[in-house]
Length: 352
Image 1: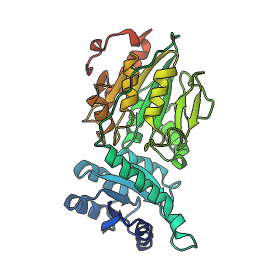
Image 2: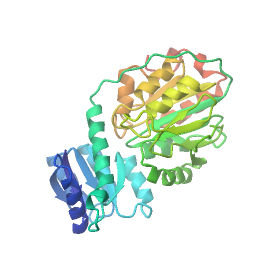
Image 3: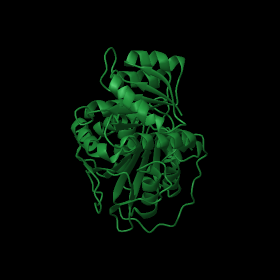
């Protein structure tokens, strides 16, 4: 993989070079010492992946991420030595399209390969993600469902660009929103608790990490909180599972959406937001096949038009909407006694 390093600290650059050297397939194509140089270098020679520092002179990593994703988009991973201190900046960068975050590998010590392992594992996953982006998404066949009482859930999936999109969406929902909300965002478990706190602070809605055995409830927002997949069980509670182990997205939106389609006993709405790759498209299609309302974010408002495009390509979305339109649409939909019974063509802006 062709990798660029953006960091103003020589020691951090050296640590990243040493870590990448453990995988001969990785090539450092250029190094920039501030965000402005990174924007220029990326326009001239766009790499497969950028390892982006947050705090730099001239232009920081958040603004550099924003400009690169607007002008010369590529995969970006934020690399930082103090993620807790800069958590807000981390999620701001992810809102502009950064895929993930990892600690800067330590220099020195007795186990340099072990110190490099988290970074190399992230890069391996992103390599699979890039490859999977060109892979056709296959939609599974619907399975029979039991009769439904009138419980309501909104299942939301997001990836690159997701934090900013989720902030806008959740801000548009009232505190007494009459449905449960469950979020699956592609984020490492070490950042999940911080993301839940950040979303709660910027949206005004109560956001908590989903725990094993939790039951989605009206007015609550639960966020997948581990590197295992979250799924809904037949008894209506949430659980975490390592299976399927071959899913490159962790936690997988598809796994959760499919479990909602299979087991949610009431009414459901699926929402797929900005993100790279195709995760969520297959699960959203299964939700649509069960006559649930499904919504995909439109290209213009996406930081990365990957996952919603995959959903649109297989007809998984009943509606394709701008981000700012999704919250009002959810309010309208859950106010109906049974939004599932309306035909797709009755939805303005629907993709039918």
